[in-house]
Length: 154
Image 1 (cartoon, rainbow, N blue to C red):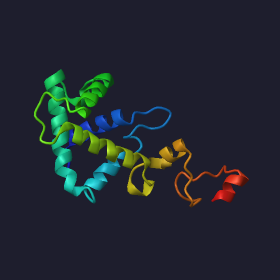
Image 2: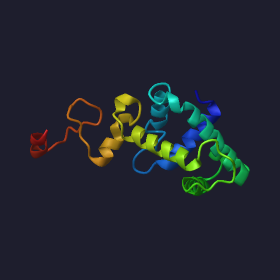
Image 3: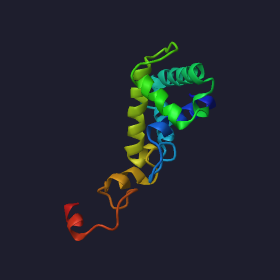
Image 4: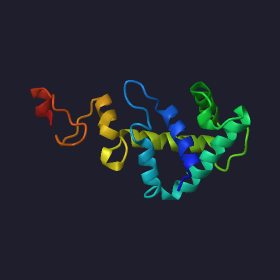
């Protein structure tokens, strides 16, 4: 299980991976809930990698900026994440930083676009964003404003 500090780091990192615009950012869309739920389930074997990776991200941030990851500005966070994605680190990581970020990005996308029943994609907002309509007209995110030709395709 992640500590409160690690959850704060996770939240900040996820919101830089999927920032808010006209649609919710990662955290507001439930990506954090999705990942935390999965770490107690199917992703449980990766819980140590998450814990170690989040600690390493904070250590890297502290070494470079003298602050915690969530305390630096968005531009600095983005720059740091880009460098780490290329494997450029100043501190020793227990897991290669590029591999950790790849894992985090993959799970962020999963949580953002997943079926809301899995804990992410609150209100099916990402489905609305991409125009996806579930086959079940009562499912979260199902559109009720379909044209007759769109209804015929269902």
